[in-house]
Amino acid sequence: MAKTQLKEKLSGDKNEVLYCYLRVSTQKQIEDGSSIDLQRDTGRRVAEKLNMKYVELDEGGRTSKTHHMITGKISLRPVYEELKQGIRDGRIKNIWVYDRTRWNRDMLENLAVKQHYLIPFKIKMYEGENAKLRNFFDENETLTDTIVSAVGEQARDKFRNLSISGKRYVSMAEGKNGAFMGGTINYGYKNVDKKWKRDKDEAEIVKDVFNMYLNGTPLKNIKIHLDTQGIKPRRAKLWAIGTLHKMLMNSTYTGEYIWTDKDSEESFTITVPKIITHSVFNRVQEKLQKNRKHVGNNTRKSFSLLSDFLTCYCGQKITGNIRKTVGRKVYECSSRHNYWKGKLVEECNNRRSMNMDATDNFVIGSIKSIMSNSSTIKDAFKREVMEKKSMDTQQIDFEKELREKKIERLDYQLETSTKAIATNKVNHMLEKTSDDLFNEVEKQLKEQRLLIENERTQNIGEINDLDNRKEWIDWITLHGEKIEQDFDNWEDNISTTAEMLRGMITSIKVHPVEGLNRDKIEKQLGHKLVINFKQAIVNDGIKYNDENDKSKGYTLTTGKKSLDMGEIKILTGGRGKKQIKQTNALNKNYDTAKKKRGS
Image (cartoon, rainbow, N blue to C red; front, side, top):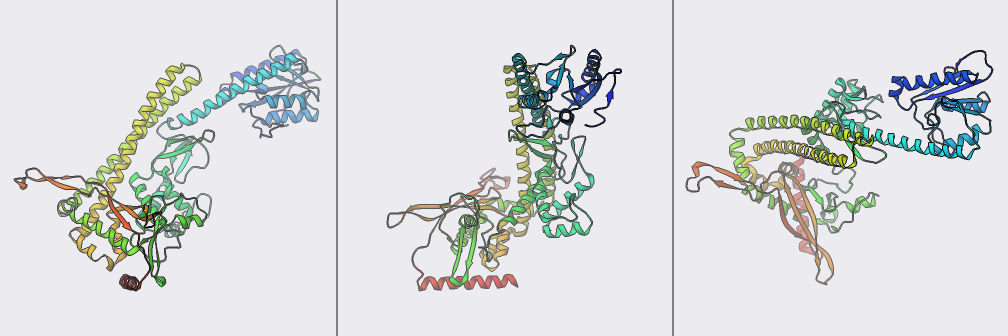
């Protein structure tokens, strides 16, 4: 046993020793001192009464968890374990505790210690101010043991639940910065008094990483930059690309950390100091998604126009597959390929591929029609680009900043709301409020919190829309009146055309079209394509303030962002001479376009 714990405090020239085991339940009781002092004074009086030497074993505010002889759980009470070792060594024969709950609250452990320590080693155990000697063979004593242990376990579980509730709800309510819940804190932050605080130097590095990637610097070059500048990660000598990738995907840097309770598996948001704006984070995620689309996909041997945009209704990407030796140029769902690689994928009915050239022409024709007829585009080029591009860009930045500040205010309101929820929860668990009052207050507080969360989500979405608008203005500036011309010559430079498409559309979703074939068998007959634009330009228009006098101005009528382009039929029949000739001609055009791109 530790000398500090078994230091004997003699109460006279006595032969026998009374080992007094002292313990409280909480750190607060330790700091307060009243409970320990009471146990200590009582123990000394009992030792004097029994004419024994007083030896103090102070456990402090340790939990009642111990090393179960049956379950094998690790003890969190080292002095208690030392005491058991002293019993085995034959040095401890007399023990005193203030009451039975100070000794043990666990029924299994209590039974095991009695059967394997107290009875075999003939230990005398005294309790309370009157030094009552326990009789381990008395049935009433055994019943009392069971009741005390059961009540102790219930109380322990109650306070454990209270502690969990505190972690769940009070975590965001401890001031402006959220509580740190343990573990390894993210790079860019530090743990100060169990609160998330921004690490000034690391936070600047995090900003640099995000901005470098957003401006087109590959992760490999960012790693080289950090390593050569002597900027080291916390647990390694050099940076790993995977570490930087995880950093860029971590939403904690926008000011919210998601903490998951291991027992209930519920997740809760903790407000932390913001390092990266939502605008920067959202744009980085889009860039990551774009760069991730074809990683590990060996079917994409050559560049294809729509591979960055086509997605299957099943959730997988649709990628291009070009094999010139057999005249095969198709788009197909990657679910089957991913399934063969052992990935978990949903069942997909898009089993048939799409002819690449027919699909490209079909999509380009639909987009060209929409873009050429869009009143929004014509008005944007006339007003926003030619007259006030710089002013509008500044206004967008101003609007984004307003929303970032609004989100910070909403975060503070969420903290206040959560603190109220926590207080209500704690009061109920301490039985200070009735069930009816608790449920009514909790309902109102959670409704208020939901409204705040929805407003916060809306502001984040508006920031994303403003970023898209800024990109839209840049796109209009670049293409403007040349849209029709650019589309007419799209095959001359497929990569440039793809970049132009990236400025106007977000995705093209492909659904299977099924029906009865000529043999009356249910088969996939084609594909339905739905294109999603970045701006609401589908069927938009102009409404003049005065139809008889158009000089009085007009307003734009908002269109839709999505367009159902209809169905592309699956080509059927054998590859006759005419089809082979057409395929060879398409391949020739493709090779010519590829050479031009290379030049």
